[in-house]
Length: 343
Ligand code: NAD
Ligand code: ZN
Ligand code: ZN
Image (tube, rainbow, N blue to C red; front, side, top):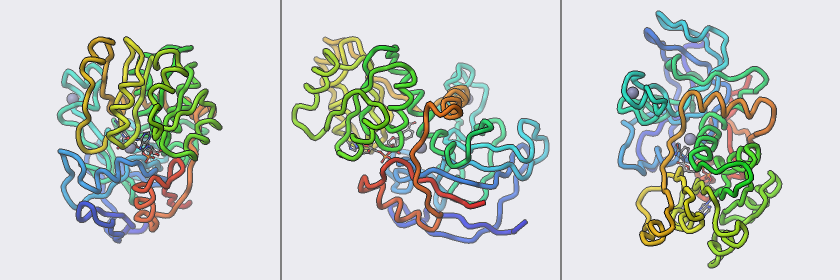
């Protein structure tokens, strides 16, 4: 086995990642080593590398929380996985397992949760150290590159749709048809909903139509909210906002039906104004949603096995990561870039 690996590091917030050859980490007791096959590039990686949020990872760090690979070494005492298993190292890297949130299956909000590619080094590297109790188990029949987007974009979309409480036959708005949104359209259709896709890019809206969305609305139109209301007969029962743009949030609340739920998953820096009277008088619920539990992960991956949900991916080598980040910033990535680590 080689002793060193390629990895892309954030050394300064907002600056280009630096590719370095570093020692392959050694898994400690209770940890595993994963040889990366593929890792998706999420807009969250860009926020993390830009230092966009109130919490920031310690520098330097290796981003990437859609890493899929093969378990190649086990630390002492590991029984949850074995060598040769295909696993994913997700955003929810680990949690305490004992607090009220962990007990309730709300483990992503555990105060002791660690985040992959953020507080722990992630998948923009040839090897990843992981916690075997929190890795995603990739079902047979799902290739690494196809599984990669599902372990963040997929689970977050799927869980967010569930959190809207929209039922089969009802309307859901998916705002933002990028990495998360193009999967959200497919999950919502598979879950029996009518889907109204909202984006600021004609190409993304055309893509949503190809994926089965029932209606498309250009968010740049002054009457975008009215268009959604007339399409859905008074607003969508559920709204899922994946767009990394504050204007989409105010707009999404306006697209929500009376007694409907608007779920926020996009994470642009900042705050958005809430039309208080409308939210109160229309009994609208505004709810945050943060990835999902390990059970949500298994459910989200299951949709991928039989092809009900399939990520549209563009493969790139790790050396292209800065170009991929620039394109993501400009909204110039069609769906999901997956870093391919080769055979
Ligand atoms: P992406 O860049 O692939 O897609 C963003 C999409 O939003 C693009 O299609 C873009 O055209 C569209 N968009 C931009 N402005 C818009 C607007 N005003 N109205 C409608 N659409 C608009 O990003 P992604 O990887 O899908 O991530 C999206 C966001 O979700 C990021 O902020 C990311 O950090 C966040 N995220 C949150 C969680 C969570 O657990 N809550 C998990 C993963 C990602
Ligand atoms: Zn992500
Ligand atoms: Zn906990």
